[in-house]
Amino acid sequence: MSAPNILVVEDEKPIRDMVTFGLRRGGFAVMEAANCREAFDQLAETVPDLILVDWMLPDSSGLELTRSLKRNADYQDVPVIMLTARATEDDKVAGLHSGADDYITKPFSQRELQARITAVLRRAAPGDGSEVIEAGELKVDLGSHCVMAGGEEVSLGPTEFKLLRFFLTHPERVHSRTQLLDRVWGRNVYVEERTIDVHIRRLRKALANGGCDAYIKTVRGAGYRFSAS
Ligand code: CA
Image (cartoon, rainbow, N blue to C red; front, side, top):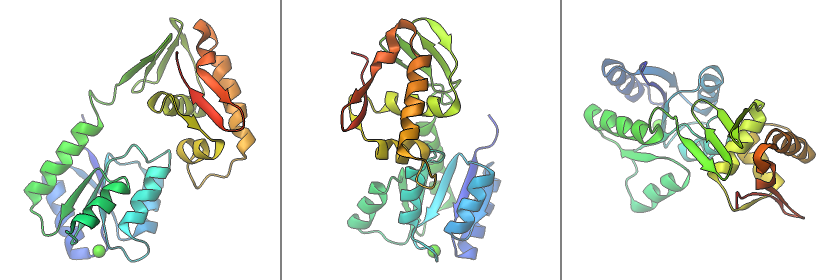
């Protein structure tokens, strides 16, 4: 495995330098951003393995940044650790509610930081991310993107794969078109709601083997629900 790539979002340069220096010494690859805008610029270039986000940033809070990352289909699987001087219970809960995977209170030692990073990365990538989900006649390897329907391999476009992955990891629940847009396409993408229906149709067509197309149910007036039973 190559060195895990960490994006450090911290506006205070001395702290950012210290963290960056320590991580590089610890064998991590590091990208840096001094604010949210720079963070998104970096993310557009490379999606890191983990993001360290300072709570207090000049253009938007680390909390807001974490929320928008978790709403974006391209970044929502990237674990986030929040760095903060705040240590009250409420703040900790708010951080975790925003979607952060862990929380470190300043001041912290390099050893503690790296131990937390390693633990979060291990949790985020069980077996190098090669998780296989089975549902009825459907078998999907989330790592290799191999999709088997009724025992035959089928090929899906990238959007259909993202849709299917979302359904598999959020089954038995009704998702409105707006929710699917937010969670699968991401907030910053302009797509008409009926575009979703087009992708659902393509996904069903691809999954016709073994009757897997029937797992994606239309819930009239509400949206879609995935159920293999
Ligand atoms: Ca700060």
